[in-house]
Image (cartoon, rainbow, N blue to C red; front, side, top):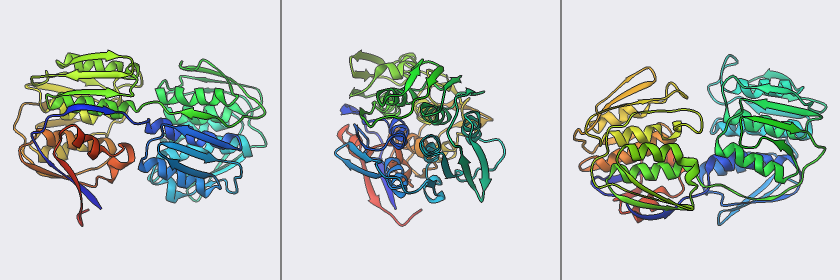
Length: 420
């Protein structure tokens, strides 16, 4: 087990390159199940979640090899149609194999994610979409068992746009017989990235980049090489970190369009931002202004940056609010931030932050990926030394984050620990 030791007071200053997008990689990798052969996914981040997906695909007979951010995938031979609990419990994106397995082989056995009951839950969107395409769905011992002689085109409407259900349904529909329509589809860049990969493979998809996808099923697809888009959440985290520490940063290999809402909010908070091509520069030489946010599906403010924005508002002199409309229980970072001296009150899905208070170093514990990032940022504001436990969460979604922070002037180091 590792932990981070951070000495507060550092400013984030310098230039870094943003890694490939975790969530795009996790959508593109299962797409390789749709057509036998060899793929190369360039700009793939070296992350715990990527390795988890690689092991899951490997358990099905797919060979995955990551070499200097080029992920080689050979799906020529599939000898298993099961996604075991041991993999799915670590990462909900493992459920993405359901659609392509059904589409190509007509069968799949996929574990329900950990903690899920059979009642209402996010995976219902996935299952209902498969049923709309003609699949028979059963639950056996905590596993979804799905089958279809061949999927048939159908009309799928999501009551709430879901990234995972959209990519799963899109993959399934590419090989279904006839026409499919997916309405209220998710608009996130990672969904569009997967759609463009599918089109490159030979899929017939109209409306890419919109919330209405028209898909004409084809008999077969072909392997491709594809480049993974930059990680907008990593980019947003570093921008917020520079704003919080009153520093200056230049991000390279980033898509500013994917961060338009975040950039606008940072400007509202007093940051000077310059966008040129695939580069974003930010500077601020005074405490950020209190600025309220409400998370929303893309192109709204991303829920994956909610915790980081909460940390930013700790440095603002005044009261601000953070409201999360995507995940109503996504404030598990707040009790840990209060250990540093934060003054935050949470009611339902709304947090009131009274910023400008003195923070002091403490030992805190990561509860999830994005909460972990907020603890790092808050530790920059705190006086003295902070220790952040359970940083394996960070390794799921931030590639060598301590090295990037060190390059930007942050006093942080990773050490082994017996603490859990």
